Structure formats: C-alpha cells, structure tokens
Length: 180
Length: 277
Image 1 (cartoon, rainbow over the protein chains, first blue to last red):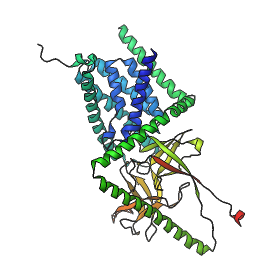
Image 2: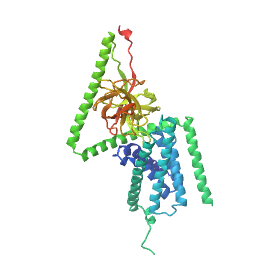
Image 3: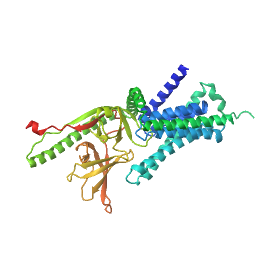
Image 4: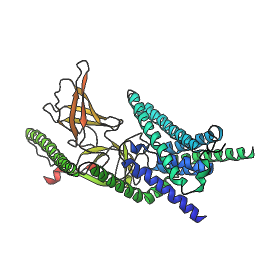
C-alpha cells in the first residue's frame, strides 16, 4: 500500500515538474502542450473515475498554488474536465478503443480551454478598462487551442503506442478488423 | 442501478471536497499547508526550470550556427550595456542641468534590490507571468519593478505570498508602464503589452517626433518605479493623421524565455540631507 502511494506521489510530482518547469521552456508552439490533461484522460480511461478525480483535485490544487489566477481556476477546470469526459465515456464514446481515447483527449483539451477562456473573459469584464482586445484574446486562445489539441493528441498516440509494447492492458482496445 | 448510484455518490463527494477546499482557502485555513507545499517543492521546481531553460538555450544554439549566435549575443550584451550607460548618462545629464538650475546639489538616490530565482511560469496562458522564490517575507510588494541582471525592466509584481511572488511581464496585455522616449522632445507615453508578443507605446501626441531606434525608459511617474529603467527601443511608429495620438512599437532587448534570475527594486534609500550638512 505504502509503495503504491509513493509511486502515485512520484508520478504526480514528476508530472507537475514537467508541466510547471519544463514545458514552458520548450520552443514556441510546443510549449502549448498540456501533459496534465493527457494524464487525467489516461487515468480515467485505464484505471477508474475515482483515481481521475483524486488526480484532478491534486493537480488543480498544485497548479493553483503556483498560479496568479483566482484560486480554484485550475481546480474547477480540471474537475469539470473529469466530469465531462466521464459523462462522454459513459454515454457517447462508450466503446473502449484507441479512437475513443483520442476522442476523450480532444474533448478534455477543449473543455479545459473553454473553462479557462470563460475565466479570462470574466477577468477582462471585471478588471479591464476596455473590451477592445477581446477579439485578439479570442484569436490567441484559438491559436493556442489548435496547437494544444494537436500536441495533446500526438502525445496520447505516442504514449499509447509505447505502452502498447510494455503492458497487456492496452492490447485489447485496438479494433481487430481481421476477424469477421 | 447500484453502480450508477455509486458513481453519482463519488462525483457528489468530489464536488463537496472541491467546494470545501475552495472555502478553506478563502478563509485562509489552507494557507500553512499551501506554504508547506511550496517550501517542499520550490527547490525541485526551481531546479527543473533551470535545467530545462539551460537545455532549451543549448538546443537553440545547436540548431543555429554557434559562432553567429555567440557573436550576436556578445554584441547584444554590449548594446544592452551601452544603452544602459547611455540611459544613465542621459538621466544624469538631465539631472545635472536641473540641479545646476536650482543651484542645489542632492546625493543620488540608491535603490535597495532583492535578487530572486524564477521557479516557474504560468501554464494556463491566461497571463504572461513568472513565479519567483521571494515574497512578503523578503519585503516584496505589489507594483515593485522587476529587472534582469543587466538592469532592463521586465515587469512588475502583481501578487505576493509569504515566500513567493508573481511577476507580470511588460509584454502582457494587462501590463501598463509609464514611459518616456529619449528623443529631442522627451516624449511621454504609456507602454502596454501586446498579448505576450510585443509592446506598444500609446498616448503619444501627434506633434512629437519619434525616430526608429530611440531608446525607451521608465518615466518615473509611477509610484515605486524609478525613472530611467531601460525598457527597449522604438521599432516602428504608427502615425495616422486622423488619430488623436500616435503609437510606437517597442522592441525589447530581452528574450523573456531565457531569464532565470531577476532583481526587484524594493525601495529607494532616502538619506537624510540634513545629516550630511
């Protein structure tokens, strides 16, 4: 049990360091990558919702501690992501396949960014002197979202393909088209 | 059905936990735990930031021709130093003229600095901010200017905690800095960020003459921000006859992605003139 907790704690810390300290220093566009969303999607998909909720709360708290934004922005965004992808997984993308995993990653990235856009717009409405820049903000947001979607999906594919060779847990979810 | 109830219970419990955490944060009960978490992870994140920054800068150097980059960096460093010297010289010249006019000599006011390491960057891309490892405990306050080790202004403190602070870069869309251009007219204006992509100097009267390459420094009209801190130089001027004011695009000498250590001007040390007399 203790080893399990240490393993999870280690994974959590590694992901936080990667997201907070390493990814922002990567070259332009690549720094849009959001590894936390990918990890949460993998946990929900391969383990269960309980772990996904625990991880989303822990990641959200940690990111909020290191964020100048209103406390709770990341916590609520990540929690909302888990809720939405869990709903999608149970009602829309119910088939446990590789394509579902990609679909869930797409939805998770989209939801996270939409929540943060709402946050930014609220911030603008309350604190900005004029709303002239809203168009530019929306353009930058759309640009970042585009790159984040591409990079997150690429990361999901890479992690999936690598893990496919190391664990049996991933082997069952490729749709076998050779059988009739 | 029971599985569905179980899942609903988990989600409801999680919602309660999230709301409870937010409540505990806002009544500041969580503060000691947050500070403990920061203290425990600060050094690891700081090291991670430093290493990745180091690797990234070396990766870029590897990509391009090393010699050209080295030479370019050398020239840039010299330029920054020269511009900094020029700014100091011009400020001193102005000050000297003023003092001569007044026939009253006052000592130069030194500043009290605090050196801080960058421990992280805002990941949500809502704001261009960095996190530094000094806070309230070290005397940092909101609005204090943050400089690179070469003395160039990079931003201002927007939020402080016990042992960390958040710095908003001058190129963020929420950043505003009172500035002046070192030209013949000593043009005053307001520098605003452009979504992390650049800076614009606004509210410049149409009658003022600005040239490309003119140096831009802080005007000293803001509380806590001394005058003469180098911000950048004029890259282009946008002058529309029908507009009331003209605008200038300002380019910075800093690569905001490569900063690892910063200086914060805490306050001005005011010496008692009577004591010296």
